[in-house]
Length: 377
Figure: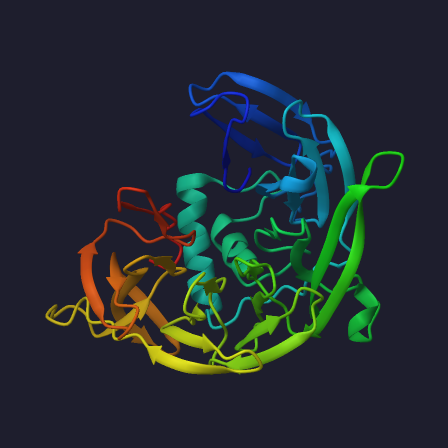
């Protein structure tokens, strides 16, 4: 398994592109027609199959490091590797210091987990170690059992890599092989004389974990993450905290940062927030008005359903509709729409076929593409 593929312009062939991808055991570069440019082992090996044991063998996909012309991958185990973009040669490898996060699935009754696991077992089978996919995916969404739970950021201005992960085992006061604290690591990839190597530049440790990808402002002078306590956290490039903004409930995805107007967009399980960065603080711009299913008699409540994506004339979002059972939203219908950046009101909406737990991708022609993952539905 692997995360998102990376597409880069091919500097040797004007107007052409190449596709870069990594799994836990292999990295590769492909032409758009599928022809292999290079394919190399990562040097990591799959652990032995142990019944009922979770394997940390997920790749979050490659990212580009401009100063060294390399592609870098981070695994959910915390392993980080860099490959020469042109040749595929492994040029550096290391591991972030975190320990696996404490596993906890919140707000879902065990009866629902058991019934959903039975459904996925019937359709998809189980993992090689016998685990059911529904509970495994939900546990991953909540950050349990792994060191890293999302993609990572690279500042193209400085080349600094930002990886959101867990803190060290002992940081929570108990040396038990698990971590109850989150951490953000700033790393450098540079020539140490005998070749490239990763080095730890700065670390920010905080209460609670994070499942968000660090978002780097276009000028590289701000980095944004969220924690599972409900805070949007703004940091400078040295990971000094500039401000925190409490959303009232945990952020459900990574923070979206506009290159203009000091606008920041964050989502909780139900709402979309626009914040304005004032330098040493943030103020609330609006909470979005979601009226996608206002005239649908089958829908009792509406809620946001995916990471927001900023466009020139709005914010692309996904909206779900259904009803509430306790603190959970049961999704019956879902679609994609565009929020007005000034007012937060829905400008347009189109009913979709299936939900997603990925991202809202907007193409150059304005099409919205999502990867279907019917976990909540």
